[in-house]
Image (cartoon, rainbow over all chains, first blue to last red; front, side, top):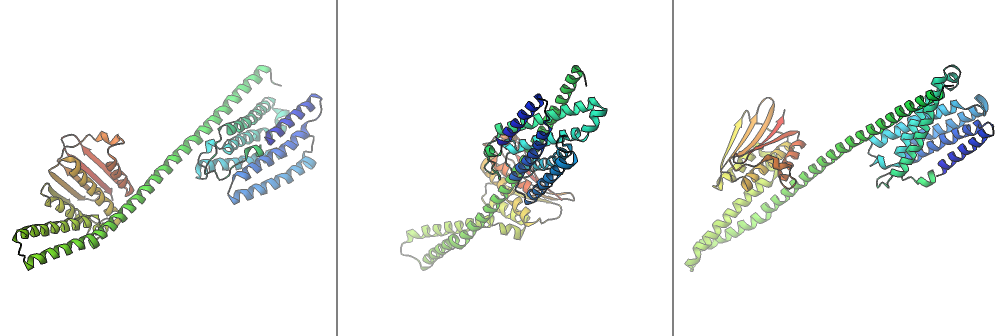
Amino acid sequence: MLYLTFNLVVEFIAGIAFYYKLNNIVLYNIDILIEGLTFCYALYYLHRSSLIKRLLKITATAFILFWVADFFFIQKEYEFNTYSYLLSSIVLSGFSLTTIYIFVFEKTFKDPFHNFFFWLSIGILFCDLGNVPYLMFYNILFQKAILIAYSLTIISQMVNTILYIMIIIGILYQRPQSNEIAKPNLNSFL
Amino acid sequence: MPSSSEEFKIAIITTSVLMFFLLAFILFLFLVFQMRKRKAQATLEKEILAAQIEIQEQTFKNVSQEIHDNVGQVLSLARLNLNAILGIGSSDQASLPKIESASELIGKAISDLRNLSRSMLGDKVTETGLQVAIENELKVLQNTGQYKTQLDISGPSFRLDKQKEMMVFRMVQEAINNCIKYAKAKNILIKLMNNEEKYAVSVHDDGIGFDVELLQSKETGIGLKNMQNRAELIQGVFSIKSAPGKGTTIEIILVK
């Protein structure tokens, strides 16, 4: 429950900061890094392909370096780091799509619909794909086309909700799989 | 900033569209997964069937060799000994007819065993060819005196590859066994056809026939279902036509 607890704490503190009219963007920027690395690790844990594992390691390393550059030098800590978030969204979308493909088309997993990571991958895919347009046009649209910006904000909020719904469905529907190559220790992961 | 009613509309539309796409995506994945699962199951069943058939053929071969090497030899020796006793002559004249009768019975047993061994030995089929193998089967059946058999050949004689010939021969044997066991037939006709498009082998009897829809039942028609599966293994088409009182025709078609 670690990840969900962390998110809850972040939202709680951000809410308090917002109430007291303090800048909570720093917290969200740090959350971008934690969320990106958490999902990279989850997919790294799941996959047995050495190629995918290597790609995930490279991606995570590159992401950390980019985030540091964005946080300290490019957009900096008090502006929402859309570049980092966009990068992690695009990359995680690709990996989650690959994961879903392996679940459905490969023989590795017997019963994907009772596998927590299958539902997590769907959640990540929807969340990250849904966030991409919001992140890409965030700065421009809020200045020029407020209605579209607002629509994209709604989409972003909804796809984040979908991510949590998928996590809950994954927890509820998962079963111990006899031929599941990766047996996740769910409690320690979350 | 948009008004609250616009906000509400946007929120509803966005939520609906997103949920629709999500559900459609999950449904798509589910359908694809089910389709692949069914295909994998069908492939596995075919592989199991192929393995079973191979084991069966090996068993037939072993039994055939045992019959030839051991049982047949023992019976031949027994007959030789009996003939030797007949040759020497005996003071007990009453036992001579019994010894002659025993010798004849052993001779018949040897002949039957030879036929059985030949019928079981798959290599014989591939050596002599399908046509000769079927002719031999029909000859054995004719010799029982209970059936009239006929082999019709249309088109030039043909050879198939070993596996196909073996499979077709076993299906013909199964069909003939079904005629003997169930059909109460008097006449059995086998047709071999070879034209430009296909090879076809059909087995027809004038027996009591049956309702083909009974094949759907799990408890009946397993032998015929096995024949269907064997035909599919060699990319053949298996069909069966029958009706109560109208005999039965089984046909195996191999498209060229």
